[in-house]
Amino acid sequence: MMHSSTSTAQGNKGFDIIGDIHGCAQSLVRLLERLGYSCQKGFYQHPSRQAVFLGDIIDRGPAIRRCVQLIRPMVEQGAAVMVLGNHELHAIAYERLRGKGATTNDRLIEETRQQFENHEAEWQSHICWFESLPIFLELPGCRVVHACWDQTMITQFKQDFAGLSSRDFWQSAMTRGSFISRFLDRLTRGTVLPLPDGRSLTSQDGYVRRFFRTKFWAEKPATYRDVVFQPDPLPEDIASRELDADEKNNLLNYGNEEPPIFIGHYWLSGEPRALRPNVACLDYSAVKDGKLVAYRFDGEQIIQADKFVWVDVAKEILNDSQEHGIL
Image 1: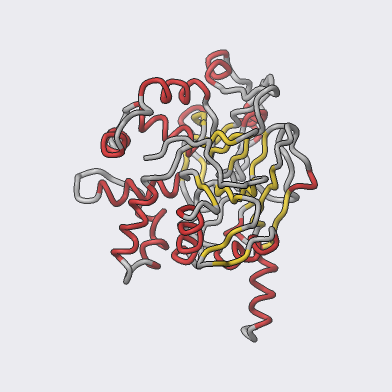
Image 2: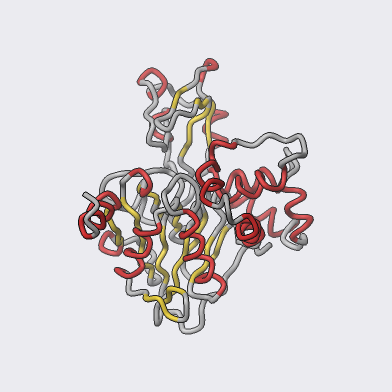
């Protein structure tokens, strides 16, 4: 298990950080080509840059197997690095806990299992590869994590757990309530607050939720509206509710003096942009006909609007269908 990394490809002059792909392989190829990558020696590479994948390359989409086949060789050959997303983490748990009395959400991984139905050995090989991925990256000039940067937990992990063997790490990760399981949950799923008064919400994708996702970079928040960060809006009476002292104390705050950080996970829409001068989310709902987004990082300490690059997934699918006479 590689937990964190500062290594880069030899001769690398910049990073192309790419948001959640979720099986949109066609759009990934077009985005890579737009960024100047080409397929040489069997994998996509750039003459002077390195791709950085923010996780969640599997589940939901039409070409999940192809996505893994594209990205894994890039990582193994040094043309890219990738952090673990919550969907890869769920896949590991699904495979490692099956038949052991534990429950996992089979619905999350349904499309992935179907697309690997006749390729079981390949799928199990990918599970082992997922287990080798870092959870966060501290790259020259920036940080990368799938959902949340919790400095306190990261510091504790580095001090007390970074030397664990892969076997011990994943054994602890599969133990409910352990530090490693909580650490993985925080970094790959983010922070949440419970909905008040035992209430629940049904999200756009049909899941009933009793918690809502929150920002880890909120500055001086006063109400639930100031911290909610998810596509499903809160009812007005909840959104306007004031945060109490305990809730405020439990919120994280990623300071303006910290290095630029890039995350995925949160299903944004609209024009890609920074959330704060040093915080950018690159998940723009690709698999829901949104955008597959990259940011071209070259060491700047303030995230620049003109360095976001993307493909419109719905338009890409439409154009490809027209080109091949499907429509």
